[in-house]
Length: 380
Length: 254
Ligand SMILES: Nc1ncnc2c1ncn2[C@@H]1O[C@H](COP(=O)(O)OP(=O)(O)O)[C@@H](O)[C@H]1O
Ligand SMILES: [Mg+2]
Image (cartoon, rainbow over all chains, first blue to last red; front, side, top):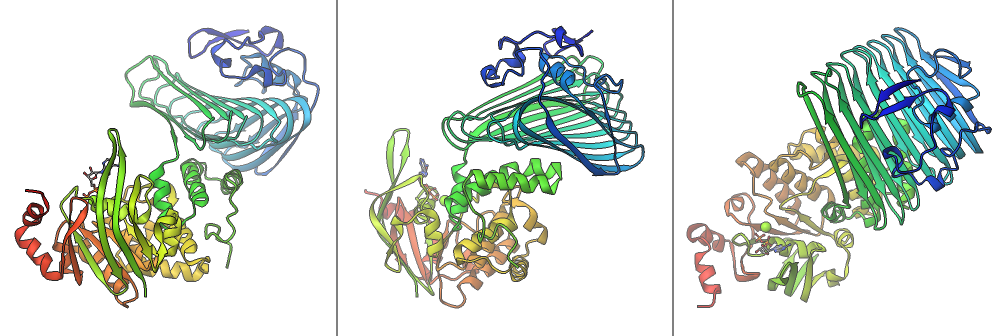
């Protein structure tokens, strides 16, 4: 058991053992927004999760192994710091290790499908030095899943990991995504959260050597009653690294609730770093609630730049007026504005099929059929 | 042949100290083939008139009427008015982040024409229209009005005018913020739009310089929320020489 400082500098227990972690009361900072009663008990005991999710890995230019949770490549980057991630690890039957070998290019798609059971899963993604990899994780179906994804980006590697939460409306998902970025390496980590009843994603990025560059991008759309939380922690302890965090959320309907926490810690040795984080939320109706808490802590002033921004707003009437003054009906104008709101995140993610899925979801949620509107270019 | 008819129009805006009447009885008829210039000092209510014609929700019409070919415009929603053939080139075009110019134009043209143009023809049409206004093709992929210079925004408005071919166009200070070259390009666009005599234009402006390139048959002096004098092109010359002083004095109670 080791102790690592959390953003609030309180020592935090890091241990594979479920028994080393307490049951949260809900008063802890990390749990204060979470609706504990709706977590399907994922947090409330140390018992193994005995159900399963179907995990399938396909791809090209990658190597996939299945190992047990005790393999020494497992829980190295991500050592559980709470009961849910410890349970995810302990309950994971087959840990997948997905590797992009040195100096090569690999693409993987991981589909995780729930069938209404309670399960734990653990996945390791490793981009070896000088490799370029893209891994898309797609979550579908129902059930309650505690999952860990540990990500290692080797020196000078470029890795994109995008996790899409497209769960059925009743699913519960708590995930920890921990990444370490190597020398002159680049990580793009994305979170696209659309479905589920309660989804909590806790990404953490740290750096192993100077020159690391991490971009964390997120997009979420909560409808009536959905709780979607993204709690980001960027730990700058190494000089000359960069982080950029951009999460955008749309909310509609009574009781739609999103939480975005952006903790960026710049430790005293992390000189010449550059960090910027931003969260923007668009409230499409009354009755929805977006919590947004950027938290930038600087222990050194010898940096290139550090900033944060957070804003939650409603539909811009002037934008809607402008579009409607060009003949575009109101419902279609709203779709354009929401699509536009998400465009920069999707462009940065750079994955056309993820973009298409998000756009389709936006259209469906806003109840507009785009056939014949000129927006879908499929008529020739 | 289209006719926009505005009769004794009164409109107000909600302010902190209650509703404030800005339009105080505007009467004006614009027919196909006609270009009308509405000229007035800042704050006289010109943009309010333009917005009320387009249906901006900020303004409440308290009395009077607007009809297009006999149809009650005030009864139509903002987008219905545009589909009925009204167009407003805005003084301050709005930025719509993340919506590309090409998607925007195609959606808009589809809505106004009632069917999506065939993709290949559409791309050609858009390219030609952009070229005529010296708009760089890369604009098609940029977000609507985002990061556009003042002149680029105005050219983008005229691009929409030419693609949407409304029955009646209201151009609100389309000339402001343009250098001489851009002013000529924009004026040529308006003249192309107006050329075949089937459309009407209501040109709102503060300055006379655009009238060197666009020649209205009718000039109206606008002050304090209404038209205080109407005439032919000679009225613009008079304004150029004398300014608004005389009209303002004449309109103000002694
Ligand atoms: N939303 C508003 N709230 C308060 N006053 C307004 C509003 N819009 C316009 N006005 C006022 O109405 C008057 C006319 O404005 P405007 O129509 O923009 O004039 P113009 O376009 O001729 O310069 C001005 O005094 C302006 O301050
Ligand atoms: Mg004005």
